[in-house]
Length: 119
Image (tube, rainbow, N blue to C red; front, side, top):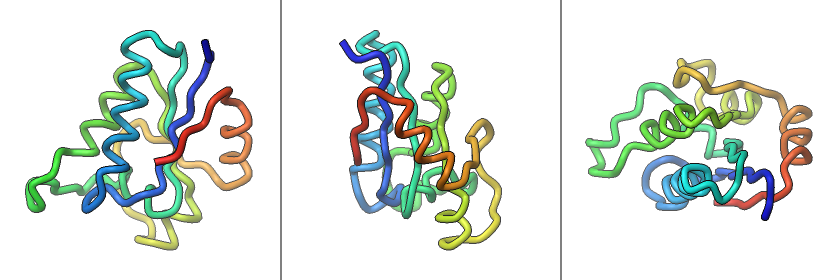
């Protein structure tokens, strides 16, 4: 059994199922005890999942903010790559508990995990 899983989220929060499915997969693996460590790294358009001002009800989609908060409640780490976020939307408020990192640290985070899966 793997000891750590990193969910690499590359898709925007709404309009695609991948981001929600990835966040929930990580939560499911953690909550079920399949892996002792399950974290998420948000890159590219995936960084938009960390933006605090989400209104999923406007597009009738489940909340990715809730999925991130659920991961954080299970003491998972959720990272967002600063350069990607700034390129897309600038300096905006993020969900509490999300850790902003640069690409150098992101590479280290990837290397620290036994399994990495991309959504």
